Length: 367
Image (cartoon, rainbow, N blue to C red):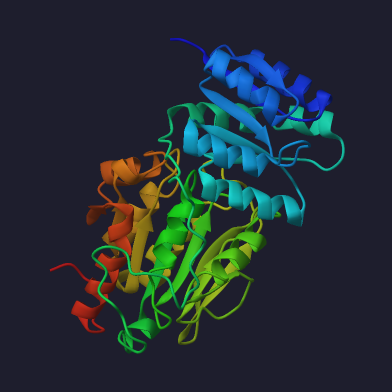
């Protein structure tokens, strides 16, 4: 097999040197060039035709986002962003994912040398994933993000008026699991949900320091309220709850109410938060009132627990290969018999809403 040819773009000479060293230690990849700014990177990309580039978020001469936007319009290719663990870094990184970056690595604010060495496996795993990911080309002009009131319905969507789902929203819970490519996929689903949607509980693989900004970003785009989950809080209709980075999220019952459980613990399937933890609680606590959604992501996290959900009576949607950035977690869910329907991303929310209307508040046991 040919090696994954990588170009490193970072304004820090130390970071460039460390990333080059980390990449060249891997038997299946090589760093074919380094650049201190996007102008130098442009020439390297043109001359070397790399498989993947790592790109610093904030650089002099040309901002990393400006460069990424131009790159994804003119010569789309897999990009792994290198971010800082700051609020500003999180905001910029989320915008980079909107523009088409495959994933990101959060470098430490201090102790960069030791920190990057500690992240060697994460960095190289994400480069490998990026090399196999589906890359989307940006349109010639990027439309501004739609406001909740003005967000257009996706093709195939039946308009949903407030109150149209009735008491469904007090009985059902929607569970979403996602990893690589999932920040945008989850946004696509949530933006199509009406204000009186059943509550949504989400585990997206994301490190500490980024989920709060991600939730705030979605909250400004969606009709439902979106927030980072807090331990012990009641799970309410018209709200979405995102697992905090570095903590597991599950659901429990307190009397007649569902509540969120946010807890520390060992990684599950190498992840914290883990989709397996969330979906297993859905099978145990919610049963036939659960609706499962598995979106794009690498690996198998959550697949077996999604089958447990289905066995307990839930109805499950899985994203199809054509619309996934990485068809890993969805493939595993399909292979283990967890899927009721396999759909393109843009069809998942409309199908879910149509099923909710059709069941008229009844539990979703298959017939």
